[in-house]
Length: 101
Image (cartoon, rainbow, N blue to C red; front, side, top):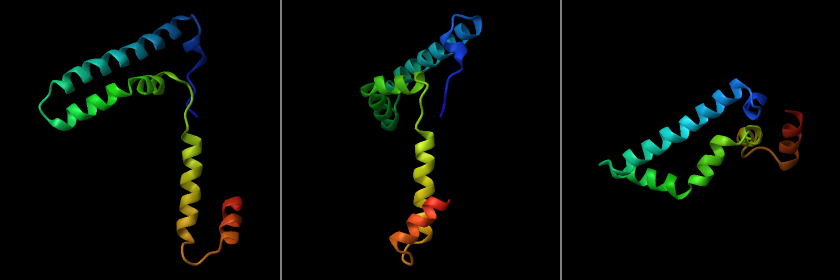
């Protein structure tokens, strides 16, 4: 789980630097979106329009301290175990392997 340091939420100088750095990321993203929308390759224009359409989600992903990485790791692990037993294992064996791993 990605957790921002406590200093970000404080009023310390390091917290201010972190907030300014994140503000710089938003500024850079907006500049890139403007450039991409004005560019020639249609794929850049489509990507920029897609990001703008769901900008609130993009902003939340950059700001929030939460991440679903641990869940994705567990899903990947279960899928790997499932693939290894494909065609030759029953559900009971799969259950035992997932719980044992």
